[in-house]
Length: 187
Image (cartoon, rainbow, N blue to C red; front, side, top):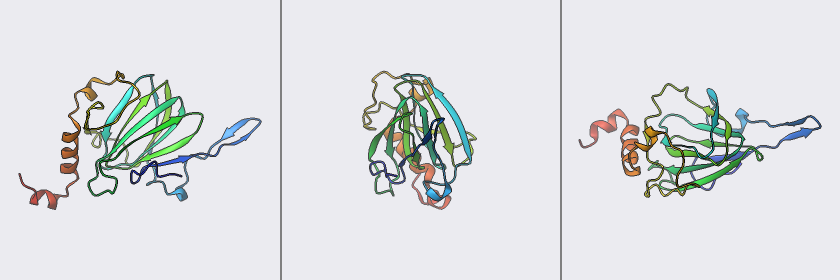
């Protein structure tokens, strides 16, 4: 397991396929690995080539991403002011030929670019209800400083309408305040 280049809480754990004449088996999760809190929901996702999903950040949940088929780039940027890795970004390359799990903690903005058609498993530590999906920024904001593999990816219209990175950072910090902190904050 690696710390994926220094973003606190982001891990990449390669799998060790156990093969024989029938094929191979990979263990994809054991609680004892303690990668992140236990996923409560698993989704199966397909993505067309050149699609970029994101950039978004969760306040509550950890994500587990396990690429089954294809080639993907995950772009990440830490927006947690209290983290040692605040402000750093990184890229993770995944392929279905080298199975691994990537964990993304709350407070790390992330997006996934599909170099080819993708099939992946997406684990969530908080069941999806839409309430942890409202913070994001434009994938191409220069302040975000992520160099995606394509200058012209396929992006949902709602993601093109997202604010800039500076606005995302302000929104995340405001949302992360406790009620006591919010009372002390200037208007």
